[in-house]
Image (cartoon, rainbow, N blue to C red; front, side, top):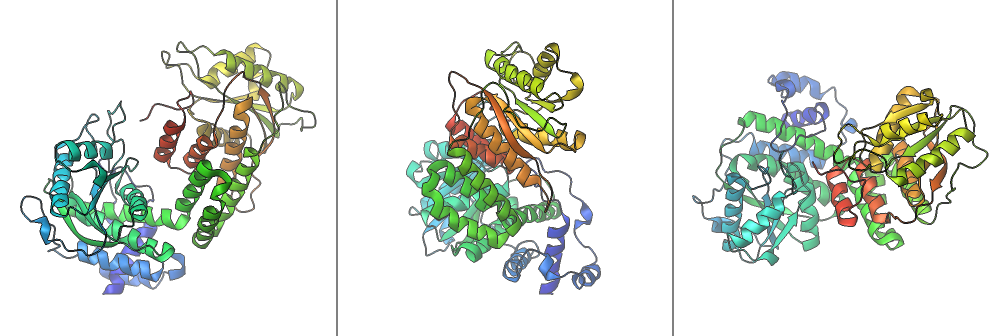
Length: 519
């Protein structure tokens, strides 16, 4: 029977989509994801080679055991604030209450989130030596001030519930339960926590329990850091869906988390942050992370080894050509001149710096008349939604004699990372012969542009595939401007798919034109 339930989880992990929806915006789940016919699951078990599962036996056993204890036991015990005394909880090590957020409404706490905080406060008062870890990012459809669940939770706990601020640690990036688990574990490690109790709504405890238990087992295996879940404490709330659907969402999120952990991307992002913050001083720590990544996913490790080496190279000083591309580049349609945008004036007209960049593009396009050109940059005009950087750039180039059939327009991007992602999409679809790129921008922006276009090419290239390469550059020498290594770190993390962490790094580093409004 144990093997049967293990199989059920494995099949779900293999078949479901790895992209998990946000906590309060879950998308429809295929009801056929669960096997109603156990005989069919038994038959499928013998057709699967365990080596293909990317989940070792010990982690799989933990998932299976926890799944049975939560979703398959009708009397799974949940302690409710106001009904049960939190003092019945038992733990002996250094302990934390992990308080999970709930989607904000118009940037403010809902009654349910307040109830979770009140449950956490009751538990914290019963155990004054425990810390609290609040987790939740800037959620909700209408949140113009970027309020975060965790930030508001800390305010509520201190001002309304009387909990000392120095007992509360916050994660303001998580956007779903998977993010809650991944991010809060970083805080738990920093604080040397040995045992945790999850605090959330009653209907959410099962899903949170299995995700945190699976993550705890994975981290114990790979890093030697051990955390034990000791009970739970909840507020009572109306579940937004039936319990069987919650199990399906749990399976999807479990799949997402295990896939992410096995990809080595957690280690890659930590390497990026370390290097962005500490440069060469992070080498020893990053060597440990890279070794762990190699053990998890050698293919991704090889890609990030290239990216980190490239990053160090451009950080040490990349030669920049002024005003025009240098001699010796191929004058064929295998070369593409990449014109990077710059924020428009509020009325949609181009700023002087963008026009100066375009003069460099024009000089280079005239020097290499067979090269393709891609203009990249989206709508950044505060008072003109129709205007885009790329559109204005293409118009200017056409007015100055460049044939439109040479020009591609990428007008959706708002960051340099998106410039790279969206531009390469267009070139792959429309110009398969292009494999050499020449970056044109302001001088201070060339290193970042080169790094991101090369990194994106490395990340998307298949084994043995001929990837895009940045072979040269040309720049307008701007009177001012700079982009730090930490800004580049945020951009690399954006390429890896973690926009929320990327934006946090961006906003902590610069308030500059490239940053889109936080959605």
